[in-house]
Amino acid sequence: MYRWHAPPPRLDIRRLRPRATRVWEAPLVSPIKQFEVVGAVIVADGLVLCAQRGPMGSLAGMWEFPGGKIEPGETPRAALEREISEELRCVVSVRDQVATTRHEYPFGIVTLTTFYCDLLDGTPTLTEHAEVRWLPPGELRGLDWAPADIPAVEKISADLVA
Ligand SMILES: Nc1nc2c([nH]c(=O)n2[C@H]2C[C@H](O)[C@@H](COP(=O)(O)OP(=O)(O)OP(=O)(O)O)O2)c(=O)[nH]1
Image (cartoon, rainbow, N blue to C red; front, side, top):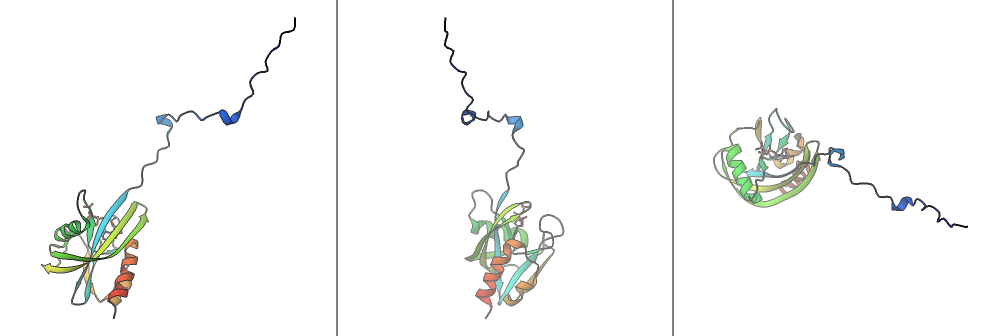
């Protein structure tokens, strides 16, 4: 007696789905760290305060605008007032924003927002920086700035150089 056999189902590779990756097979990729940072462009008597980072840690020896990371729940301006009080032992009032830039460093991505500031009280005192210098705006470009700061340095030079 003739028996009809259906042909075996053909393998359709489009229907093959990769099986779910098991946790222990997932690639070990740590997320890129992100830092929200504020910097103070303190201007007094036509001079701009520049600060050199200490010899240890990230961007050692490079020049920056004093400041630091914004803490959770803090506004950028409040963070800047706090950082300047902690780092330079003086009081500033925060004025207009200069620039916001994002730079990818080997250790993470820094989004730096800089503000013009007035010095209200105190004399900048070194607590963690190697050095501070008051420079005319036209001389800012001569320092070895942290890469995230370059657009702000350009903007300040354009704003303040007569
Ligand atoms: N403060 C400051 N940090 C800058 C500037 N440009 C720039 O790339 N950075 C980088 C350096 C650091 O990696 C990061 C800020 O970290 P920080 O160490 O100064 O911050 P912080 O005072 O909150 O430090 P910490 O308490 O976490 O130790 O941003 C700048 O103009 N000012």
